[in-house]
Length: 109
Ligand SMILES: [Zn+2]
Image (tube, rainbow, N blue to C red):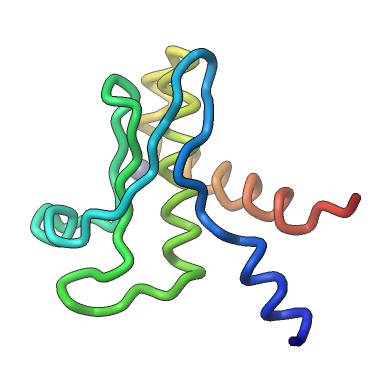
């Protein structure tokens, strides 16, 4: 097994994680999200993130799915902080998500 495969394994998307006292559930909903025309969405009030592994019948790459997960995670964190205006700034959310993912995946212990 090469390093690349190992790295992919490390990128697994969690089923749950905590933000303050809330436990956020992460799940897939290919049908509803495809119908809504999005790759993911989230609700801090419902404590959940939904992402697609397939969009309108087309398989989404694991890399894109992980990008979507981080994007929704940043929305959840900002909403938990009460930073709703920042959470609405998609460009901010997207760049923050990319940097958060990079910092996680490049971490050395
Ligand atoms: Zn967004």
